[in-house]
Every structure is written in structure tokens, then in C-alpha cells.
Amino acid sequence: CQRILDQEVNDPKTGKRIVMAHPAYDQCIKASHVFNLLDARGVISVTERQAYIGRVRALAKLCADAFVQTEAGGFVA
Image (tube, rainbow, N blue to C red; front, side):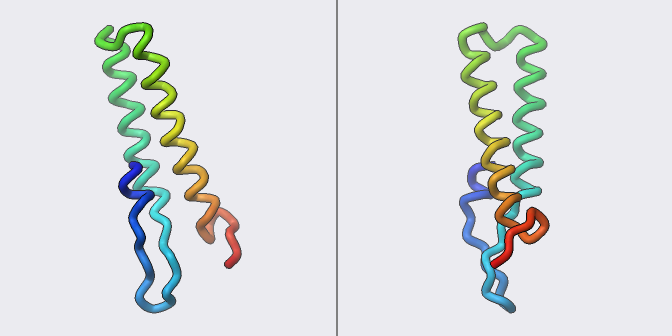
């Protein structure tokens, strides 16, 4: 998720920077799903649980911030 958001992708026709918020969000959802599977099986300890939740939450926030920077999110260049 983080790598997708860090990529510099420029449109060759317009020269605009392309923010790939949706593929990054897909990876965030996968990370959340894996966390839920591990948590349901009791693999994650109580102390590690908060750290994992924080990491997935931070990824979701980055994806939301990236979406706001797109035209669909209302960004006007």
C-alpha cells in the first residue's frame, strides 16, 4: 500500500501526476483482512493487537488523503 502511494506516475499526455488511491486502498483492505484472520485465530497477542490496528489505520488514512488529491476527490489543479 505504501509503495503504491509513493510511486511517481505521470501521465505522458498531460504531464499530470497520477495518484493511484484505489489500488492502494485495495492493499489496505487486504492488510485489514489478514489482521482479522490472525486476530480471530489468536495468533496476535493483546499488546501486538494495538500496534497492528494502528498500522492498518495509518494506511487507511494515507489512502484517504491520496484520494482527496485526485480529481474524483475534488482536487482542482
